[in-house]
Length: 617
Image 1 (cartoon, one colour):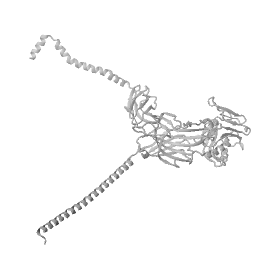
Image 2 (cartoon, rainbow, N blue to C red):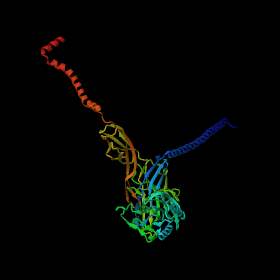
Image 3 (cartoon, rainbow, N blue to C red):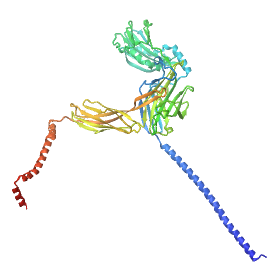
Image 4 (cartoon, helix red, strand yellow):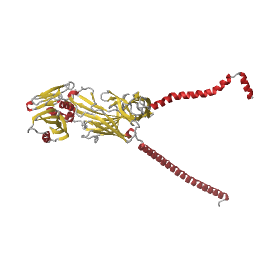
């Protein structure tokens, strides 16, 4: 039998077991719950971090989409023609430019550029269509042909009796046109049916045709006089050679005389020229002393002139560059980026590169120093047309992180070498440097209008404010001329610092005989930004003292009134002389009215003054 004590022990143990069980189970459940909560919290934190990351990415994307560079419409840079510089490569000899012919010279005539804030587009307008460099084999073949057919470059004057008596110019023109159309691949470019050829009416046509795998450029001028036909044919190997001698050819043609001499060369015009006369044909001309004239066929009425022989050089490479200088607070002067479209002589194709340049010094170096590539495209095409005179350049401004201020410079470079490699040179044509956003200036005259009588002079103030924070400027002032109202600027040229203000005195004088009417004057401010550049080919400095230029305008009006009439002159005299005297008299009368009683009082005897004082009491 189990004793009562034993039962009590068993019951107590059972109670402890039950208590422990009920204690462990909640703790286990609670632990599981806490672990689940911690897991959920971790997952929530991860979700929050993911959301924050997505928000930051979205904000960055929005910022990227909304960040743009300045937006501006089409801007224009005008560049002088034939203003390239000859540059000598290192370790080579300079070609004799006067005895060398360089085909396809780089000549920038104009640059147009605009931007929507994201893409910068530029168009370089050239004086002639761009030409790709030829391979060495192509060049050797062309050179051989040109050496064999060097007489292609010439002027031929053909004087013949008319085939059927008094043939009219119109009929002779029809015959010439029929002959021209027989030329292989004949293509008329321009035709002028109303020219003066040695004081006779004439006709002229410029055309091209094919011969010996070459496209020859040729022009023909003709007239009829004294029962003879006079025809001048100017032929050149290609358009470049044609253009190179065209000025001299035109001078030769202008010197030609048929029949009685109506005009001869002056001493100045004849400098470097010599005269030729054909008495039988009653014909004469002047030609350069370094040209050769062949008149052996004179009896047949044919005269041939050939220019001095020039060795054709090979265009070995070519590149077009848009240089970008980004303005910054810590910027040193120099190029930061460049778009370089370059000819690859190995692949015989064009490459496009966006380069980030390093500043190797304090000078602006326009050249291939140390740089990193931000973008590169091989076999770049579609940026020019061989029949058109332009080249297209574009730049994605996001690759530059959308600069808010930058400067642009464009230049084209062609390299040349002789077929035996003993001579090489290069031509570079560089535009002025321009700035983005376009410079902003304010011109204000104070007052904006004045009225003057004949003989009057008045000074106005002209304020010139430079709103650009980066550019110092130089202004030259001018205005339209008038014989009746004289306008002078004092000074007429001045410098305006960046974010600065300058003033000039505008002296206006109406002449004594000026007609009474309003005169509107336009103030023209020619604003330049001087720049100094260095060629990457020779490290030679180019001092662009004129720099890029812009024009700003402002207007003011001068109204000239009629001269004073006699009545107005008298009124002015009254107002200026009589009125002041009258006013002074009135003032003195008032003072007298006050002072007179006092004087009388003081002058009276003392006794009388005492009686008066007693009576007042």
